[in-house]
Length: 576
Ligand code: ATP
Ligand code: MG
Image (cartoon, rainbow, N blue to C red; front, side, top):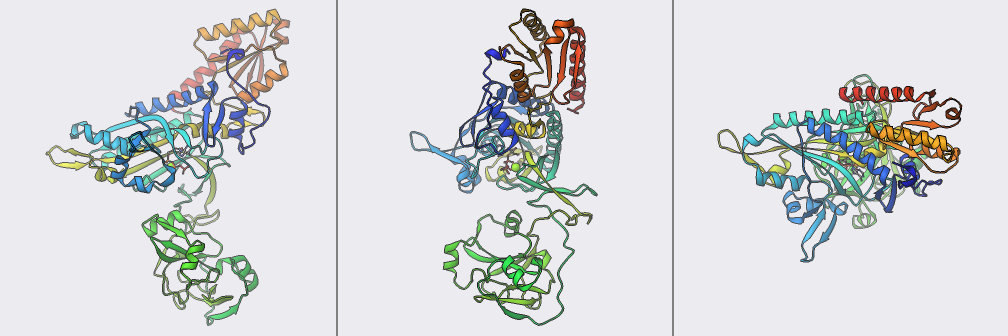
């Protein structure tokens, strides 16, 4: 690539909406442009990076026995009705009509389409297991598109779907994908960890997410360094060890005029927030349910959904409070609250010395004891772990870390195959449902995650494996005849070797060339400058380490060959 002829519109200023490094740098360095909120164009260098990541993914998926297909983005409503997700998916699925008025959705994921393909074309145990994948566009009308490629509305996903004869087969398929995912993220230059995950709208029982630790990550993970337990905070457990106890005093009413928040009341009463019982009113499938959590914690709605067995619930809104006047906003409490089902967080089991709303305006109760003064219908794990909470497995303190979810794998079991009648005939001719798994990687999110882990204040630092080019040739004062010729010769020779190189053949100042090179982040740089005039040497610079060496042409090639070799070794071992 000649830089003078390649479309790399770099910018000095960051776009106003770019809050994080990957978004800022990918736009400034001319990899990416925005068309509309959450919808991006990939320019030539950006496209190359996507292709290099995709190639790594393809190699690993093919090696794991998956076969590539291409599935449509536009999908008929009827298929989504069969799985029940036409209604369930909500506004995140973009919907449209064709000229005949038929309903379609833009695929946010492809379980329905692939299950339809397989049920219509696979009928014998001999054809199983089967694993099909694609790398294609997904559309999700996210509530809050942000952070550039991290939460886009239109993005590239690799999604794979496995079909097996039985549960054991499904577990093996899952394991093969899990292992391939680890290799993919390592080869893309990321440090990552796999954590236990909730299954959400996709469904199934067992699932892992692959997280790239990064401060800007929207996911949070609880980690135990002692026993290596790790799970998304959405479902991470923790042991309840510090249940507050009472002193056996009788419950008392206290006047708390106009105090509705935990802070106000606990400050006024001089009590620790963890002794305050937060009583949250939810409307669950139309019925009021009181959810009790300690005052210093929030209710975790992913856990709540699991306990309630439905995701049709919401916290009371203004009209719900009006419609249910027996619950007094700001003063609801579990004592005497007979009209609602009460579910309490585990940490309130046997707790005492508590304070809570008295279901009476401007009044709270103190010295309240669970079991004596109120009794929840059930206890469950309803709150999120925090740094320092004891690990649910070994009891040692855990820590919480932010991460970017770059991939997720699911054991779906029979969820889609039963709903959509995806059956096969076994050895005895009996009809059985196929066991399914599904496996996603956010390809474009992964590109941003790589940048989050590999950049400095000057620009991107691409790992060799996904860089848009291997070598950046910079001839300073390009108009000087000797230097120009040296740069052109070097460029040609690299091309003959099949290397991807970018030649900065622009008539720009050295300062501009270096600044752009830093921004673009190509791993190696060959500088043809004063040293060349003096003794014919070139300067080899490494973007990641900043190391520089003055080398003859032969030595420069030797060093670059070595770098490629060691990289190739690593890739073959799966270390890159
Ligand atoms: P999130 O929780 O971040 O919304 P998800 O769990 O809904 O993601 P999956 O259904 O598991 O996403 O999709 C598989 C992969 O697709 C994710 O692991 C992620 O890498 C990627 N992905 C999902 N949503 C987006 C998005 N809005 N923009 C970019 N990539 C995405
Ligand atoms: Mg996910």
